[in-house]
Length: 459
Image (cartoon, rainbow, N blue to C red; front, top):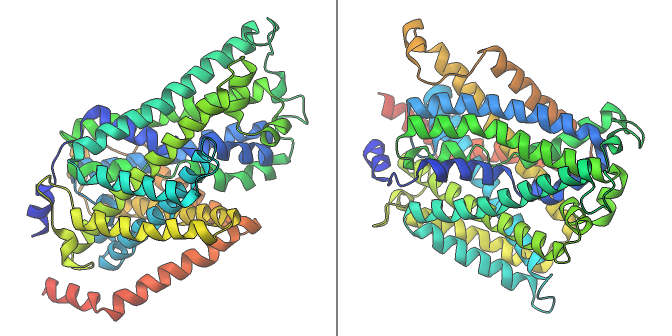
């Protein structure tokens, strides 16, 4: 049953859609605004944090790609967890991923309200949050190609902005553009207390923020059931993501911290606004506000897409209401999308009552959920390799390099980030709520008798 259902999902996503969706998911509010907090914690040494974490994310994506190209299905890593780690792991992973995107989506629609206040200070924030939710949910009801097209343009806006900032920043560093013809050079990277002004400890404490910035990159796997020519499209998208992330994250922050002393960046707003203002662009704040607005809308759009596909996959396995497995005429899981958008209305309601502090908690809870997902991807891939003969491994069209060392290194790093989250008051709540959520899911799994259904299915 679930095979025919999944084949009905329309394969309407093309190479350019998937590549830019992966980039767009990774280049979001975490870079435009969150990077200032990371810089304050770590100073210029944060460049190493982004580069090393980017390498770990590349290994995780290669592990996912190895399985997705072998078996391209909707709800990918939930399905792989079920196949290789057992039905309980599949159940937890599917519902956990749904939860993490619901939480992230709530943060993003609230962010939309905050950004719109820049132009319309008198209109209540919740109205913009509701409008964003309605528009993004509507887009997801269209054919998957329409969703891919919108994501393509959202991502393009962010990418063009970052490339313009890097190019103009390099001009300022080398030729003094916007600085009266006086080149700034790159000495700001080490003159204000050295490259590690807060020691290695500062870089370590910033790692949670860095990993949150990469949340969403695994979206490539969720698209696997709706991609034309999965082998070619997915392998190209995954291979290009690592290098592009290095350019966008490490390149952009290298330029920003070369131009401005690191200890001034967090105090004067977004580092991107500072750079464009230095170049003499009067509308800099408005331009960046528009770009960050599209970043938040893009993330909300991705969230509704991901949650819909996860509910669809869970329903196909009898672990969510059967309605969620039904597709519309456009070949999208309409009931599942509608249900996720309905839960996101809670985010609109929270705009009345939730202070900004709670959204720092929300991002750390989402990071915990993402780390669980990434760890499951790695564990599924390790188990899938163990189940293969040498001949089957040789026939794999796309492999994780240096297996199994890269798999175990990545798992160790993810565990290390979880431990680090316990040291910061803002992220400590995730170490409490994250495990409680997993325990609740395990309780539901056994209370609903899903384990018995699985045993009957295997008889």
